[in-house]
Every structure is written in structure tokens, then in C-alpha cells.
Image (cartoon, rainbow, N blue to C red; front, top):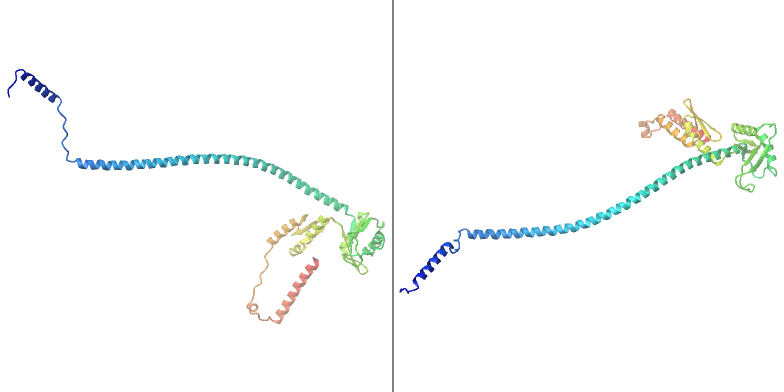
Length: 333
């Protein structure tokens, strides 16, 4: 190629500078392909899928945590309301405690008042019995037998009934029949209460009445007894209802005025003012007593064979004795 006159040197300089530039800054080339590029790409795809699953699980946990946060907020509100209710209950309980204390104080005062009331009732009963200590109750006199003057009639029949000549003569504060007036011959005759002036004569008449029992005036059977208040009469009846048990346990006893039971067992004497205390004492005695003997049945009794003559007579006599004892006990009651 023919070279020009003025272009040879600049072209060589340009080529030389281009070579230097390429030497200093070589052109970038793509790396050669690695033999494991396909497997690496698959691993990278699986790692991306697992990362997606983890992200999904984390998001699910986050949503659950958000739900737990809302539940905790609701639980906190409910706990606050429960605390308020408990505070209200505590205030109510404190108020109830004060009320219970007040009630206990009142009950204690009422107990003292009840004991005082029982004491006053016993004193009132005692005063009523003392006010009746000169009274004599006569039962069995028919209505109208006294005529028009009841005091004179009683003054005349008491010496006849008792067989005592009273000196000084009997004097009465009052004599009257109990209850409303009844027609003659209808119903049970009313009792007569005679209040004597002297207590010594009253005591003498009652002693004879206790010793002789029912007194007779012609064909009439008349009973004389002391006059007591209703409370004392009820206690005396309760004491008398225990007489069969006292006899069964071989206990000596006596009923004294106004209403106290004196007993003696094995040389030991005791006095009871309350029938319930005596009943408890008898229960304890009965528990300490020997058990009753059991009767053994023989083969003859089981078969129902008739016993021998002597045995039959003994059995009849034993049965009759038992019935006699029962009748005697009922008569004593």
C-alpha cells in the first residue's frame, strides 16, 4: 500500500497509543462457564422457596401475636372489672362484719335479758305460790250443795272431813268456786278454793289429806290439795310422770312443795328442781344398770308341745304375778 507523504507517522502513533490503552485497560470478558452452574441454580431456587415458607410462617405468627395482643387487652379489661367487683365485695363484707358484730352484741344483751327474764319469771312464780300457800282446793263437791253461804258450808264440813276440832275456829279470807257457773247435774262440778286466815291450820288439813287420801262426806268422795300456780302444777305433773321409772330403778323418792323431787339411791340423796335434770339422771342410771336376762327357748317351746302340769301351773302363777305387779304399778301411778 503506498504510503502518503504526511500520514505515515501519525498513524503509527495512533496505533501505538491504542495498544498502550488496551494494555492498561484490557476489555472485560465473561467468565468461562462453570460445570456446576445448573445444580447451583436449583439450590438457589429451593432456598428461595424455603425462605418464602419461613416468611409466611413468620407472618402467621405475627397475626397470632396480634390476636394475642387483643386477647390480652380484653383480659386486662376483664381483670380490672374483677378487681373493681372484689373491691365492692370487700366493702360489702366489711359492712356485713360490722352488722354481725352489732347483732352479736345485741344477742349477748338479749341473752343476759333472757336470763334475767327467766329469773324474774321464777321469782314471780315463787311469789304467786307464796300468795296461795293458805289456799285449799276441794274437788268433788256437787254444784249447789253449799246453798247460799259457801263460807259457812266449808267451815262446817272441814272438821267433819278431817276429824279435827279446830281451836281457834276456822276463819277464811275468801271462798269461791273456779270458773263460770254451771247448771246443776251438767258437767263436772267446779273446784272450790278456800283461803284460810292461818297457815298452821292449812298445813294441818293438807297433812291429814295426804295421809288419808280421798276423804268422804256421806257418799261423796272429796279430795283436798294445795293450790299452786300453773307453772308449778306443770312441773309437779312432770315429776309425777317419772314415778314408774323411779320404782323400776329401785330409787326412793318424795315430792315436796312447791315442786322439787328428792331421791335416794345407794345411800346418796339428791334434790331436783327441774324434771329434765331428773330424766337425764334416770337415763344415766338405766345405762349403768345390768342388762335384762334373756330367756332361752327349749326344743319343747319351739315345737309347741304342751308343758307338764307342774310347769303349766308354775307358768300360770308366774304370769299372774307379773300382771299383778303391772296392775299395782298402774294403780300407784
